[in-house]
Image 1 (cartoon, one colour):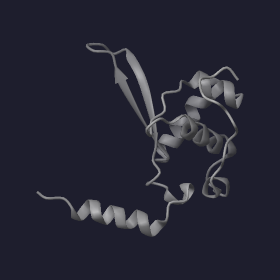
Image 2 (cartoon, helix red, strand yellow):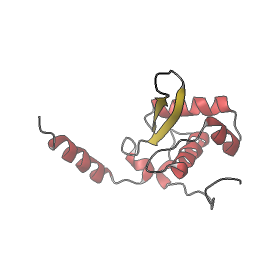
Image 3 (cartoon, helix red, strand yellow):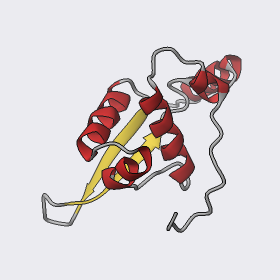
Image 4 (cartoon, rainbow, N blue to C red):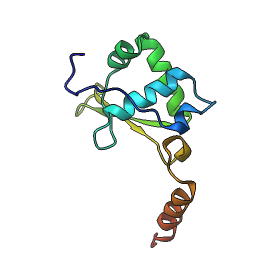
Length: 122
């Protein structure tokens, strides 16, 4: 692999491995996004995912769209100044939207939500 990161394999959290709503393509794409995330954000292009998962860029696009609709990930686009030309795409994993996938304790997740809701001063 000619990449800037040392690749030693992947670890699949039990919540993702055992999830029956996601297919293996979705699971592997989530894991690849997670492994590439720096400070919670991934900037990889569809070509990268297509190469590593041996799929077409079109198929990757469809899987990303599906994961985005299911709130497994968020996709944000940044555009060049005064232009409609995309500068970069930022993919973030929504771990709190699906905490059991990532081994996040449901009670901890709920208490974080309550703290966030009760700390609002308006």
